Image (cartoon, rainbow, N blue to C red; front, side):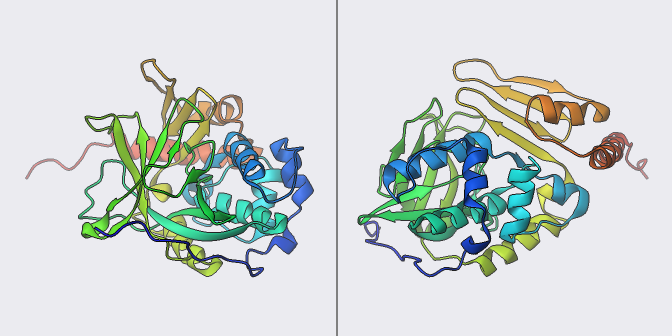
Length: 307
């Protein structure tokens, strides 16, 4: 297998619509008051603040089968209205901020694995950026929901040790034996015998806003997209990770047993506000409860009698 490639592509043109971003409003939402020069220290602080502050949900796919990726819509949703979004929305917002701050970066796409068979690959529908700082490249992954709190140097063996959930980068065989990068995470139900599991794999092929539009269309609208068939909500804390998968609420803490609880449809809007920090408007909350009741009823409906 060949060694990891050298210096990657750099995106320096204005293509992430940063002219439409209200940078002050975004940074205020993050609670960020630090330096605005494009340095590693700034990138680290921005990634940590974004992952811990900007919410993550798939409600628009589940309720409306529509997710907009233009910067004004994403900022209105994730910053002004306090709703969550998934990786494409997070990365569009983050990329616009990086661009406005003068960072040099390349957007890429990854295939989420998490125990899946690499010979039957999932679509490349996870968005990330690789930031170039003085010739050193850093993977910045703000849109996974349960992501690292700091950038990871793009070298074989690069690690994130900034929190109780470490991440590791490996240059290895990925999809169908082709070489590429694999992000490993420690912990979880699918972890391997050494405690690590491959979370996603990716190559350095540059992605552009139009590429993300194509992937986003599948994730937001296709019948086979898991984001269409049920809601999935995440909140990442410093030492706590909560998920709501349809009507199953799970809390994980380092060194403790996972706690799982079933919730009822009418409890979800309040749970979103109290635990996940996601605000839903009254009309949207009513629609969510209705759809969850329909989903719950369909799952408990008996199948056809044997012939």
